[in-house]
Length: 248
Image (cartoon, rainbow, N blue to C red):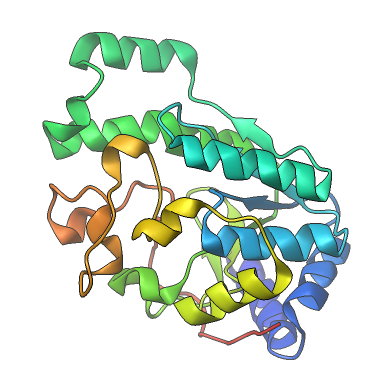
């Protein structure tokens, strides 16, 4: 970890001086063939997708298709492929594991207990993510500090012990207005659910629109306590780096 921390510190110094596309380019040079970006086709992820594809950066883009996504999410996936002439790769749940879980617990057992919900998230998201990240050195995400109290103090670069990769959050300190303005200015395809009060968009059974004044995460797993609202994709250990800003 000591060597990794030195690498992160060096990258943080460079990230503070470079624009996002220039820093992404630097990452692809330092870690050729080992930089990947996970997209859920959210506002944030579409910003990063545009930066990667409009600059023809050699960064792999993938998504996790849980099998329970909104039809609007599939539509923006198709629109993105068409606009950028690309083919975003999908990773799917293990068929046998999912089949056994649903057979034993039912198709909507995630409403019944936190344990069931987390098991469902693991099967549909976490395990496919582990396969997607295998062999990579850098994992780019669309996390933003506004989305959750747990993310307010995140650094833009951090070590992910679980997946053994360095995570880079290029728009961590962007505001919602920053993101919306970027989408409009660059005419980037986006999920129309965002226009209907959906802030954080995941699986259809586990996502709802939020009301004015509600927390960003209120629309996800709304039947659970607020402090339990993570699916396991972004589990943070103790902070190992200092927060540094970066802007386009």
